[in-house]
Length: 199
Image 1: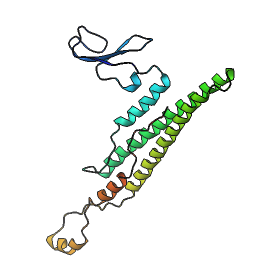
Image 2: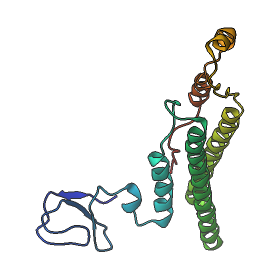
Image 3: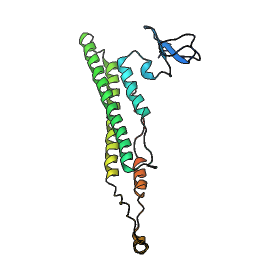
Image 4: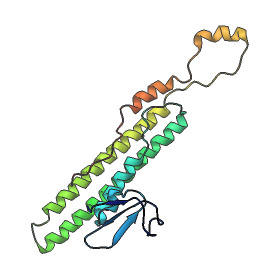
């Protein structure tokens, strides 16, 4: 990857910032200078389309908010957040698998003219496919957890009643937030990491 430089105050306007503002810049061996107001992500620091898409998928996962406890959320809010995580893993799996297929196609094309020369490319394809399988497993894990949490029985809040009725029902009173403890146990066992691709 190219070296990234930080400039505290631009001497003049550039494509990213106005004069006096801070910015980052970098340059590839072949290609012009690149500018960014914020520190560039790995996907911005490669000219390989395949690597860029792998990094983008990993960056997407790194930016997802993984719920580790229920806290003040109700069940609908929790499920919505969990569904976002599930979708992110599914999207990552799709991206990894597409790149894997492209690496295999590249290996086929290379071996058509130079037999036995595609092994290194196929290793990259296998690494991407392995990452895709891990992301698929994580997505399935979160999907199952969503179903488990939706299946938890949550008692409806009781309507206001008289003091006499309160005394009669005191022994049967159930904490409406008791489901959160069970949900926290489910969340504690879930995958919440970025999938690595060992190229």
